Amino acid sequence: MKPVNFDYARPAEISSAVALLADDTRTVKLMAGSQSLGPMLNMRLVQPDLIVDITGIAALRSVREESDVIIVGACVTHADFEDRRVPDFTRGAMPSVARGIAYRAVRNRGTIGGSITHADPSADWISILSALGGKVTLQGPQGSRTLAVEDYMLGALEADLRHGEMLVSVTVPKLGSRARWGYYKSCRKTGEFAHAIGAFLVDPERNVSRAVIGATESRPFVVPDARHLIGDGVAEKLSDCFDREAVAKMIEDRGMSDEIDRRSHVVALRRAIEQAESS
Ligand SMILES: Cc1cc2nc3c(=O)[nH]c(=O)nc-3n(C[C@H](O)[C@H](O)[C@H](O)COP(=O)(O)OP(=O)(O)OC[C@H]3O[C@@H](n4cnc5c(N)ncnc54)[C@H](O)[C@@H]3O)c2cc1C
Image (tube, rainbow, N blue to C red; front, top):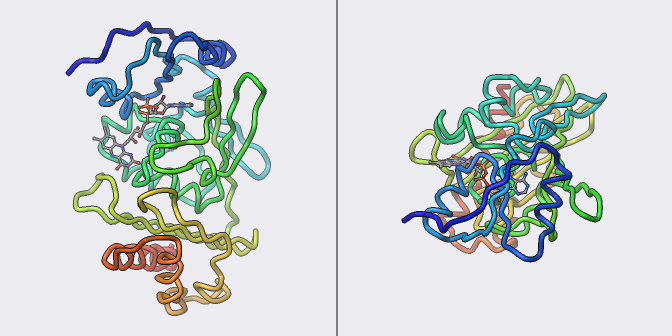
């Protein structure tokens, strides 16, 4: 199939894109890397009157470093992370996860903002950023607001975007020098969307220990203080302290009813923790 006819705009400023989005008289859709939107257009799952291509907005491709965070524009691509054009303060977590997304052609065009907003539960950025404590900043006609990545995702393919808003940047904390992380993606072939994701971070200097179960049917399950799952987080062998029963119960309590699914997710998190040990 082919997309319906649509008008096309390529603004150079965020304010122009927001003004176009606020137009009530027609259906407006933002386009970033088009790796998810393109197929949806072709299948006519979306039928916009106007496509606003945001890849020409320089501010959305910029990266800014502050004392304890790095702020990345929404249109920074997966390949920008993979190739380390974005300075890494996550002890390799972001470049490593980027490298596991799809294949190079997708990574060249796909953007961090498009991926998070598309809100596919199996996608990678949403899970690793939830583990790292990432935040998104949205801009709209009423100004801007910032929220945790995991709160931005309301459910499968649903982001917390109000009328006229767009995602402008992603803020990622700088990890301490003794931070350890792990990310395990269960899929049949390298680069595929995951069936189960485990993500884990322990950062003693910042007193942070977070665990994430991703590739659920909806939002990731975030454990903001994962110490009770791995002891105090300073043991040399964290996986020896891993409480699989507690994780399985937590997953079941949050609605994952299928036992095989639960086991895959428990194993994914355990492997993420094992990876953290060797990092
Ligand atoms: C073959 C294939 C395999 C893939 N495998 C993986 C994988 O293993 N892991 C993974 O994580 N992903 C995977 N993806 C998805 C890929 O990462 C996409 O890049 C991503 O899902 C969408 O990013 P995009 O920049 O292309 O966004 P687009 O397709 O342009 O947009 C996606 C949606 O987000 C909206 N949008 C985009 N940018 C913004 C913004 N700044 N503000 C508000 N709304 C916005 C659009 O309107 C649209 O609704 C795969 C894709 C393909 C085609």
